[in-house]
Length: 169
Image (cartoon, rainbow, N blue to C red; front, side):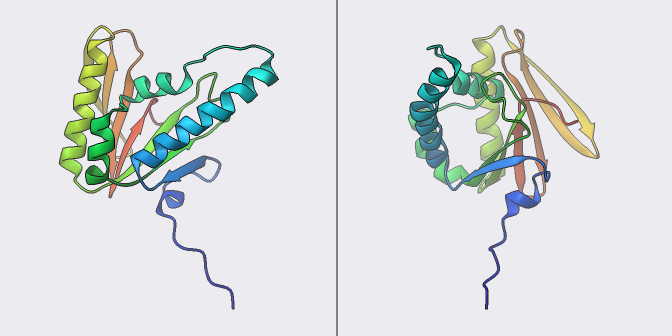
């Protein structure tokens, strides 16, 4: 008798044609990003025939209004239960729509933290412009920097907190 696969809530929240990478903690996600940069960047440099720092992960960190700090690593386990990065195409270095799904332990503290990071990020990029719109009955909050580098779209759907660098289709 075969055991059934465990339920994967992020799979249910991800369109069938999208990929997702799941992590139990922010620290695990950051470790994965570091490993990808350490191993993937040299491989891409070899395949592209050029050696350059593309700043890929820093760009997405800025776009999403996320930060990597000792405070994030310390408070992450108190705020985030698990998370997943979701995307629709493989053009990560060139620029793609990227969404992070969070199961959070404390939604109000998580939202306050995300808003604070967005404000600090926007301060380095000409200031913050905030707005909201509705998509299929869900309120989407947008935090954008004056220069467009920060372009965070936030929403809550059920028990998921969602951050994306682009609006819903």
